[in-house]
Length: 391
Image 1: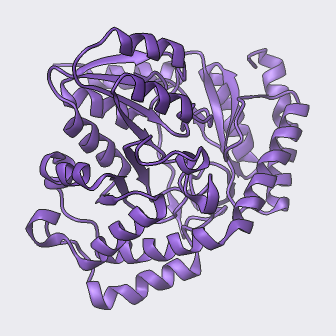
Image 2: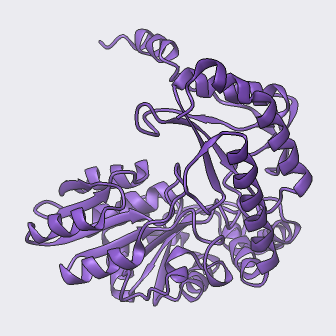
């Protein structure tokens, strides 16, 4: 039998041990964590909609009509009219022919990828893709070829060397770096080699593009260019669940083949109703995105001036590169002692030697909130100077 206690101790010694924080109250910048007030800069609630009064009211108003639980899978008796209305709304919002509602983003990636590729096929996956994409590739039992991050020339060559059914999958916005995939080039090379392109825009939906329609819309790419779009609803949209969108034929195929859709209980239908309300809000609230963009710009300018190393990102995801696991933890803990919560991200979530603090900004943050973060970072900068571990 494996020595589980020893493995846990090894994780502690290498600075990789994970702990949970206990949050009370609603998700918002000012949180109660382990009974202590903190200002959070680590949430994926990019538009500040997780606690929006209108979305809460939409959920409350739907409950008498929908009840609470989903009760069964979508293919038994769990597919409520609220779920169907959300799918229609998501198709319209993303400019796709149809959409399919999944319970989580992880389940969407697992289900879609393993349904669209199998034994004898080849999947090409960006090296920095999210764990859910990686696991979906493994579950498919297809041959997996990982191409260097956003390297179109390398992918082009790999596709040219491969025959049979080919699927290319990438994040739209990479969750740990905050950079955006070269989607136009990916679409072009996939068309040239007759490969099916799947883009997970979990961190772009709501934030990027016209009316918040995501990174694919920002690039002006159609359903023909990107046949399968995956998005999550628990980040910029502020609710819960996920979706796939694309041609009606492919969405029907997923209903038949995606195991994470077929064999799970449907999400509470009231969540679907609240999500429709949130999408309506996203479409009409451009000032919210403009405020967020200003926060990102100020943060990058000020943090860089302090000597922190940032990745080239214009999204709300702003990693501060540290390198060493223990140094990243020390910086995170020093910030928390000042009441500012920014979590350290360590391997295997990121490559070895690339530990970082993943700062995420939200439209719910005020200018004063950002100033508090920047003051705390200024006070803690000496920690990286002392250890000489900044990269």
